[in-house]
Length: 438
Ligand code: ADP
Ligand code: MG
Image (cartoon, rainbow, N blue to C red; front, side, top):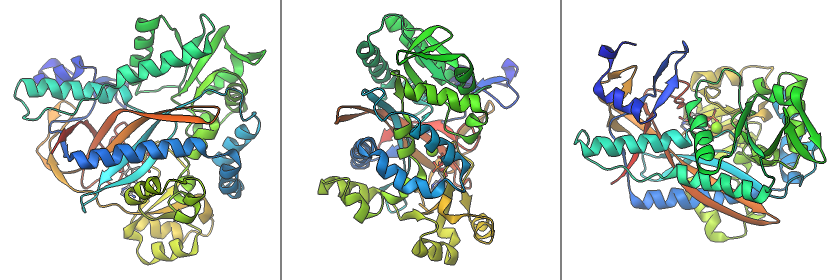
């Protein structure tokens, strides 16, 4: 892109770190939004409380609970099959220090209250970019380009401390951070920002590797994980959430090595599986939730922020979806965006005799409140259009010998035109945004 194509605004967004590689491997700016999204303090508090409860809850779920609901899927879902195989080939407490970086995503529904879209337990994207976005909006407010200050979002500080705590606990000098990545990752700057912070603050080195490379060049010695002779203290998964990540036996072995090692894993396979859509579906069932969450008030929080979600082979759910497909979203056990079924695609799915309905969940469709916003895409400020915004809360959950604690580290806002069904930024549907108080 030539300089004359840029709005000065885009130059500044780039200076604030809002960068990505586009589909042609060209460096470009992140899709961004000019107008912060207005949310009430009450809704912010509700989302944060509910996210804390939910993140803790997922950490308490025992392996037997996960197996109970995932085992029936493994026959017809090769991805679940491989993840369960990895879970079963590692001891439950190879490393008692458990750590997760999650994100609980919500829409503010047209009724005015927040409803959970999903909780992400692995490879949660954009923590650093979301802080860059808030810093950028703060700058725009100072120039009067926008009128409202965004809500603070000091994620970098929180995440750095979280990593420093892990390395302090692991306490092997010169151990490294293993950043587990996909080959040809385009959303790389969010990851590199974390590597840069850890090096600058504590001289911690990061080594980047794919699961396949870890399987090929990794080795376990006395329970420690070594990759290319680097002693791995912490393995941070920014990959491993999609079937393509486990296509070779080496890649599967790479994950098995890590799960069997004493490296602290963000997250371990158990927490990753707790985020499967079918687990999220059964956790909206009050009778099941009751035996895993004893606090009435916590259950009320979760009930108030969730919508009807059931495995699609549930008779009641199937009938509801069959009658009113437009009122539902049908989801397979996948992450990363672009996998869900909406509208007529649901009807085609229901008519496909080769489909095993137990591998999908049916979720009531949330109708988000709409607001006008201007997106900045490919160096151009777009005219205002009605948009929906999805708000994610980053959860840092730590567990050790049954003591569990979640801190809310910050937030992410992704705004998309109301005409889009899906919501990913890298997938090209949505743009980064910030929150401002109503
Ligand atoms: P993934 O794990 O692939 O990111 P999500 O469950 O987050 O899948 O769904 C992807 C997108 O689909 C969301 O960002 C949201 O825009 C849309 N979506 C998901 N569930 C619902 C729902 N119940 N109602 C309306 N839109 C939804
Ligand atoms: Mg997800």
